[in-house]
Image 1 (cartoon, rainbow, N blue to C red):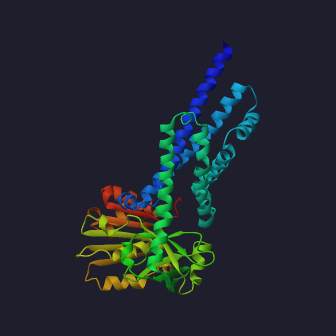
Image 2: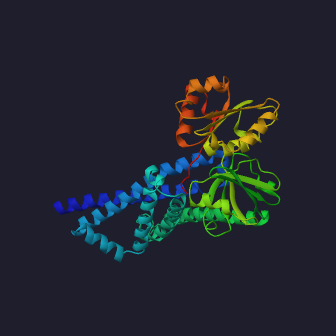
Image 3: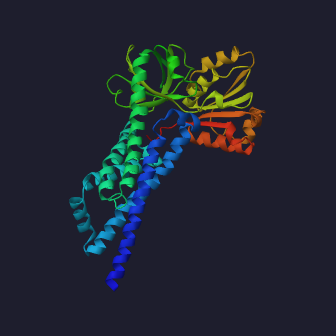
Length: 414
């Protein structure tokens, strides 16, 4: 009787384990959909918000799948009366597709650990990007283990059909939107590097020339994933915002030296082919609802702000706040001055150079600088702490959430 009771407890643990696996895997699949770069989803929700949802789902997916691994081993070991290590070894060697599933779990753990801010801060974007690409492999290699061993799928053809369809749809979206469309568009646009311009210490602009660029339907404030067909650049896509509104034949990005990839852009040769993914993001002029707009750029975060300035028409009043620590960090200053001088009074640029102590960005300071800020749309792009500070100031001023538009200047999970 006692043995039967113990067995029933382990059976419950096994059921909890399977539920955790199903839920965790579903979260992982939904997380991939969120960053599949589906255009109508990106336009409606915004890239930053999708990435935020992706980041929130990711840890829960890993926790649940980790719980599944632990609980199923505990349950099986308890019912078989053997040590956990012995049961684990038996399972991976006797059950179908268990070794690939274990490899997939290890890859997910690697992606999860490197998603934390402290871990990201200690690695280059290139390393982080490669590790996160493994997430696709992790989810793919775990699929057969699920449908061949999962009790909710074995002997349940409709359940298996639903789960298989979900995976197929995910794969189609990733292949079509992240690889197929960008490749086709890039071939049509014939985009090449036209010029590389040094804008300041450690900051360069890459000007690219192509044909029929209106087909991209890009707007100032959006960003692309860029692949330059030269050694060290082709395999990896890097997200850079446009630093000027796109024209029929030209696109421009302005990049700060933050790592090996961005540093080597200064040595791109004229005529280098460029593949693009995008445009992405909802950091666009069309989101504004007021005739008065306040735009805040921190450091190199001024680049999408500069591009946005070209998009506002019909007498919209622009107040641009440019926040930097040192005078030499004021990139694109000549362009900003030119736009202000030739705006007919519709553009005012405020340069805040120095420490945070000298130029606080709280509600009181911003209202003194721009008295109409509470009745404005606010756009901001810069380091995370600056974005959060201005967001708090906007809340204190009573600015509704739908009039606050931010673009965090940091790399995102892929």
